[in-house]
Every structure is written in C-alpha cells, then in structure tokens.
Amino acid sequence: MENLSEFELWKQGAEAKVYLGDFFGQPVIVKERFPKKYRHPALDQNLTQDRFKSEARMLVRCKAAGIKTPTVYYADYISCRLCLEYFPGSATAKDFINEKLLMNDERSRDLLNKLMALIGSNVARLHDNDIIHGDLTTSNLILREPHDDLDLYFIDFGLGYVSKSPEDKSVDLYVLERAFLSTHPGTEELFALLLRTYLDKSTRDGKEIAAKFYEVRLRGRKRVMIG
Image (cartoon, rainbow, N blue to C red; front, side, top):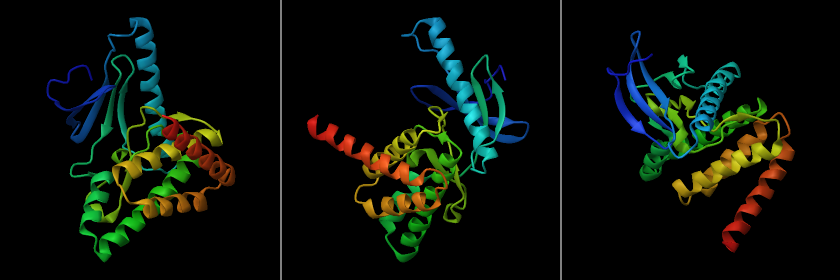
C-alpha cells in the first residue's frame, strides 16, 4: 500500500494520520504513523516501528480472545501503515453516552446501564487475557449501526501492551475512570456499575486488581491535592 492518493485524509493526531478509502471493495481506514522531527532519526524509526508492531499484535490478540476490534487487513512495517476495517455510520461511546444522558428517558437510562455492563465485562476480558489498552476512554470505544444494538468495538491500541501485572491493569482501569468522569460529569453511578461488572466478570486476580485500583485512585487524588 505505497500510494494513498485515492484515500481521503480523515483525522490527524499527535502520533498518526488516518485516511479513509477502499481496499478490495471494503471500506477501510489506513493509520499511518509519521516521523517525529524532534527525535534522533534512528531512535524515532525504532520507536515508531515498535509501536506499530505492538498495535497490530494487540488487535490480533484481541480477536483471538473474542474481543471485538476492527479486522487488520494489511500491515506495512516499512511505511508503518495499518489498514483496518471501517464501520460507516458508527458512533463513539462518548457521543452515544452524551446523547442518552441528554434524552434522560427510561429507554435511554436502560441502554446506558446495559452499555456500562458491556464495557465492564469486555475490559475484564481484556485484562484476563493480559491485554492493557493504555488509553481506555469512551472515544476509543465505538458502536456499530444501529447504535442501540450496543455492538461494541475497541479501537486505537497505539499505547497497548501485554502485561500480567495487577498494577498495570488497575492503572488501565483508573485511566478509564478519570477519562469517563471528566468526559461525562455527574455519572459516578454509571461508572460504579461498570466497575462492579468488571470485578464480577474478572476471572483472574480480581481481588488484587480491585485493591490496586483503590490504591492507584488514592495516589491520584493525593497528587491532585498536592499539585
């Protein structure tokens, strides 16, 4: 996949450009990691390629564990381009949650409760398989159309890695909590449901992860207080 001239630049972040296009008749995105000019070229190449390989492996590992992620169609190690399945009409969990919070009717509240349980059980499965997402936010969770069916996918494993450490898993949870409550203020009860489901579904080290999570949360609050 050397030529992206027929692809449309969709988004650009700090680490990569994301293009929309077609790959053998399938709608896809191409995530291209680009060089960082502030780093030494050899170091930059090694870091970029390592993160590229790690993300591709995380996606494949998730599939093997039964966790829904976009299918990897093509991976170019030299150009650091990852060609992934694209879901037209999908919505981020962030937008879905905000929409349902605004509607605030019985069906919306029921859907939010179901979504929290679904996220909690899927994060438990991630961690049971020693997958650390590294950037768990509701922007990195998407729902395929129709959104109310809650067909949930995890995306963007650019900071992901494999670890058996309960500490690493607890930090992953803490990142999710901080992102969730800052993005969706006043939703402590919803996150509490997510966390209860996670701990209920966790089949490995659940009690230790819970203990570590509360330790990490306490450390985080102390840092905020101290400044």
